[in-house]
Image (cartoon, rainbow, N blue to C red; front, side):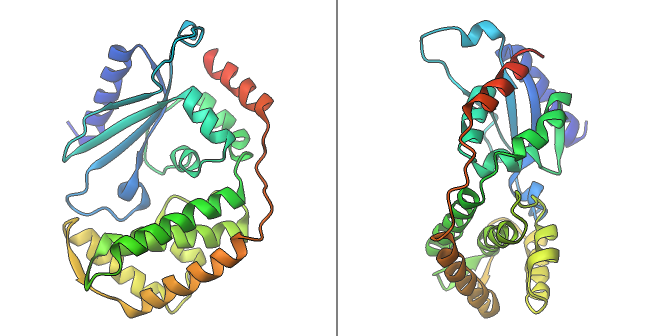
Length: 253
């Protein structure tokens, strides 16, 4: 059995055990981004819906399912109610799941509603999310003498996601190669390509010395992005009626 078949079987088992319907199941993290190491785990994420009566109750219910957290698998899912609340706030993770290039299972309703889902994307929220991720990861992991190769990529990717949002005003592509090809300066592309080659051929824990070109690139772009973000208008859609309508559509499948 292939790894893909194994993951789909685990998801099918979860459906039966939890009495849920999986609407969308994808790969997240480095495998979806396109620079997994040989020993990278499988970050499987899914969106699910329960029978309608489950939502007609007053006691607090769980809206997350987690299982298979080990060296090979990291599998968890969000209830559609949680997903849509996060969508209302333009949480970038929702858009990354919807547009993941590695899809294990998806319902036709997801494909049908993707344009409506994307209409809730907020450029300002996306910029703040990605630049905060870049700053946090850089501060925590790029100050040592030896740096994990993957941490460089975990900073560069959100920086380029910000550049994409500023130019295109849409959710950034999930595939890192697409971001690099369209947003990276020509002089930095070979440096990033070499970093990806090393990352995909070495273990997750592999480290190396600083790469000055990337350090300068990261510092300059983070500074520029932060200045621009502070002056951006709040462009969140803030429309609960559309979210509620989508929720009813998902309950009706």
